[in-house]
Image (tube, rainbow, N blue to C red; front, side, top):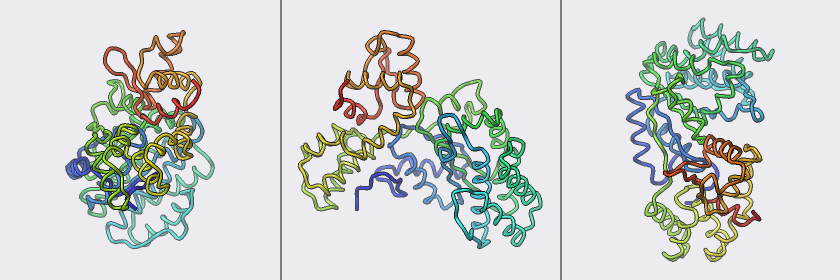
Length: 379
């Protein structure tokens, strides 16, 4: 099926330029930060360039280790980092082994790694480190002291196994800020290690634009001017229309040019929403205007947006709702009587990537579906 909603795809439409640029950067050792709102296709771009580059790579979603609003399981993250890096390096070097059991916890996988490493290649410092991490993680102890050694693993393995270039990709990287509660110097440690890794290239991505920008654009932060910032934008109108035309042609569904225009005007160039509308047109076989009018009530839209809204404070949700009622754009003075509360809410909305500031103090909602979603509900 042409239209796919939800999971990332390793072959995204219309992203050839971004993919080829990333491949050149990775092969030359240029660290990159991909930035853009949710549902814009960043993870698909990551998957596509990693697969196309033919380089050994590790892709980890940092968000997987978030526990609640402010918690982060550093032990699980460190365990996942060790197991993924080691497995990737060994497999690429020709050592054929795989985990007997895949579990959500990476601790059992690490136990299996120890035996595999001893059999295939003698790396005492690695096996000793894994033993310490496993022991501490099982006892729920702080792994800050081991983090520095763990971060050197990709470079150590690349050198020992003759790997010229390895890529480490960390999706939703901004959530590592939550790990600072247990490891306050985590970004300092990462920068101090990564800058000297000659065989490893690092790429990070995130949808909470404000949080990620704070990490990489603030002068007082360790990663200031470390990454090349690469923004992932929505499709322009022509590319959006081309995507829909080809999809409807592939699915043998007759959709007029005016209806294609209506879809693009409604959801802009967000690949996720273009795919969702495409699926509904193909499956439901209803007129496009009926599908668009019902879209804010679709369970997929409700689940996606409500899931996002749960991360926001009540005041931020209120300001977002008010901004949507103004058509998606507005000034702080139009968003509430208490300007201090409004500004604090806008700051949170920008940190999480829902809103951006335009010229002349105007704030804009990035995702048009949020505007439509609130427009169908009482303000």
